[in-house]
Structure formats: structure tokens, C-alpha cells
Image 1 (cartoon, rainbow, N blue to C red):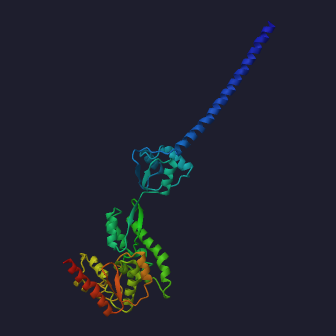
Image 2 (image 1 turned 60 degrees about the vertical axis):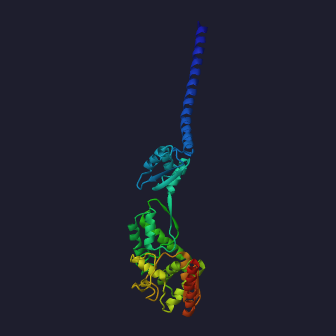
Image 3 (image 1 turned 180 degrees about the vertical axis):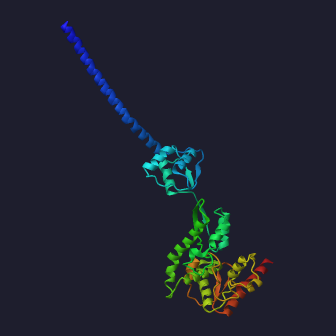
Length: 371
């Protein structure tokens, strides 16, 4: 009986040991699972974040983020548009990995498959869809406003209101009555929904930057004592040169002719200034007549000596440089060769001969050849 009891006692002790081990192993297994599940979820989330995603059928998707839209709502909208795979996961990444930066409003264009961090960087950097606009040399203020409005950048009236306020260049040209001449010709890129005032600001800022960089140093080479008035004189002269010059190499020569005439108090006799006056009166129809040359306007440089009261268009950089440093020549006259170039003369007699050759005789020969 005693041996039997010892035998049963031994068996009972071994079972308790094995049962305890099983509970330890089970606990370790559960603990391991508890550790592995979050790690697996983290790994899966990271894979989902980094995996390029495209949930729309078209090659690209355009999405507009309105000003004031929260980051959470923006990401939800992008998930609906098929740009993001998981808006909640993207929000977590934005907060904890990117330190919750501000998302920029605007119009975005998403092309092809993009990973979530790529999309978020676009939103934070404000890589919005841009539209190109080219302001060509020689356009007037009104023509610029018309072109901007026609191409859908804003309302013509709003552009004109901004362009007719000279405050943006009051320090450069205290006498300016508007921004004529100070809207720099260049190709620009505007984000969608950029306001009219912002666009005008950019055109003027570009003028300031290019003038200070490329034109101001040329003025410094001239006589001492130059002041802010010289900016105005350069821009007015450059605007006339812009309308007259076709061959780039002639710009300094044309600038010299007008500068020499101003110094000698001779009327500039520049057709473009009269045309500008006609445009302001709404009377320009593409033809300049003899009666127009007698019109009573301060822009009529056939009647009034000196520079006109203001610029007549937006001059380009080449014309600004030519006006800053005109050629050192004695010419007072020039006449067109009818091919974009001109013949220059110092005296009226020489000029009259050139007119006879390149205007009267040239056109007589052309008419005869046509018959």
C-alpha cells in the first residue's frame, strides 16, 4: 500500500510540472503574439505608405484644394479622388513623420502611381498646377490687361484697377500716374486662382529685379548726380525705342537719335507716341493720318519737344539697356529701309535724300513692279 501511494504521488508531481511548463510556454507564445502583431501592423502600414498607388482610371487626376480646407478633410478628399490609398494612415504620417506641416491650397495635378509621402510633400511644398503667361515687349497697360483676362487669369477691370495705381513704383518714379512701362515683359507661371493684384505685383517685382540687376549698373557708368527721375526718363525713352526698333542691334542707335533730339530741344517726331495718344482716345484704327500728326496731345511729339509725359508701352530688357546707354553717335534722323532696318543721318539734307530713296522711290518702284 505504501509503495502504491508513493507511485501515485510521483505521477501527480510530474503532471503539475508539465502543466506549469505548458502554461509558461502558452504565456510566452501569447506575449510573442502581442509583440508580433503590432510589429506586423507597423510593417504593413509602412509598406502601404511606401507602395505607389493610383486609384483612378485616367493617366492623371486634377484636384483643387480650396483655401481653408483642413488637412484631414483634404486627405479624405484625396482618398475619394483615388490619389491616396488610406487618408487616416496619411494623416498619421503627416503628424508623426512630417511634424504636421501646413498643407497649401491650390490646384494640383497628380500623374501616375504615387506613394503617400510623395503626395504629402507635394501638398506641403505647394507644388500646384501652374499656367504660363507671356507678356511680349511693346504691349500697353490696357493690352496687357486684355490679354490676361482673355487667357482666364482674372477680370479685366480688376487688372486695370491694379495697373492704374502707381503706388507699387512710387519710390522709383514719383511722377508715375500708373504702371505703364513697369510691367516687365517675360514668360510667367501662375498658380491657378492667383489674384489679379498678385499677378500685377509679380510683373512689377520682376521689373524691379531686372532693372536693378541689369540696367542700374549701366546708369552708374554715366555722369554723377543721377537720381530717381532717371529711371522714369530711361523707361519713357526705352518704351519709344521698343516700338521703333525691329533689329536688335539698332536699339542703341535709335535711343541716341531721340536722346540727341531731346538735348537739342527738337521734337522727337515719333509715330508711336501719336499712336499711343490715339489708343488712349479710342481712335486708333491701324492707320496714322496727316491730321493725326496735328492732334493736340502731350504725346504728340510732332507738336511738342522733349519726351512724352510717360511711357507708351512695356519695354523689354534690350530697349531698357539701350535707353540707359545710347550709342555715342551724332544722328538726329532715321528712316526705314522697309525691311526692319533703318538708315541714319546727322543732317536734315541727308535725311531728306534717304527719305527720297527709301520711301518715295522705293514705293514707286514697288508699284511699277506690281503693274
